[in-house]
Image (cartoon, rainbow, N blue to C red):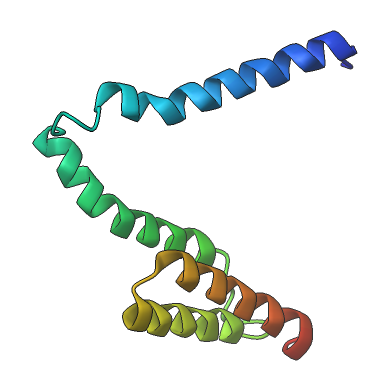
Length: 111
């Protein structure tokens, strides 16, 4: 099924409105002058760790330790992420460094 230009523009506009409204909803619901409810503060404190665990499981779920490189690039990248996060406590730096390490290992070392 192909779309014409008008339909494509409508889909893009709807996607923009949907994305923007969900991003701004938190600021509309919880303005800076009001204190968020306890459950929201609790979720804000535990969700980063839950997302890290989710990312870990998702990343390693298809690792086959019985063939190929036996999960060595994954293990090295996981160690890099853990050490960097313990040292710098910066989630973005940890994830980006682990990704770069993994891509370097699988493309240059474990070819």
